[in-house]
Image (cartoon, rainbow, N blue to C red; front, side, top):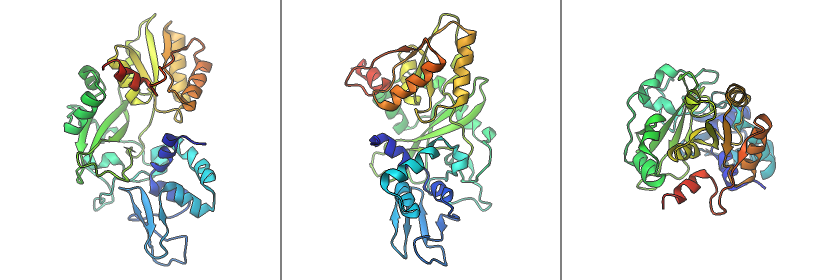
Length: 323
């Protein structure tokens, strides 16, 4: 049985990317409906709500529903079919911007392009995005999330170059840059923030630009390590921010399902070059413990720290120390 958060990850996969993986040809958020004899595209995709709907035969739903209906699979089988797509690059999966129109040449521009323009095979163009992180700006929603809800150290937020923006529909997004060890921007994660109006139903929680790489997070900290230092490995950016705010050097595996060979090699190199101690507070769930065991195969001396029973991850534990 899959956990709720695992199902949510599948539901958050870009609906149009899933449709194209199934073989549908999507153009201008529409496709020929495969569920009836369709001669004019009547299957419509709402990228804001991440849903599909046919206005002729009435077929509708989200990513899991689309796979179930198209492949004639049960719920569990559909989830198993979708699961490998979480490890595909977002360029391969063809992310689209959040319901905005494309420019006349079909190319998203400016801040809106940070949500992806849906062009498959296009590499990540760091030059289009670097300027957004030169002078980071945090709007009200971002400051509330980072400093009031997460209680992060402002120095950590500056170090990570977190910034924010608000789209044309008034939705705020936190922009999280991914840098490699040389300080080159290799990817961006857009995280949807809570709206004062609360009208966010159906909006994906995360968006990535085309070609964006989900690599080991906070790699620049590796350049600061000295022999004998401690390095904490976390799962996801939020736990990494919390660990940094607690005064530790830390990196993050993007998620338990995005543990890539390149990340393994990075950590293995650090382990061979420096006599440092590796530590980890695995999330209190099966994927978290599985991730720890995978890492332990590469880093045999990795130290396991147990979270308190009422904390699901290190972010929870960090907040409990701030009360």
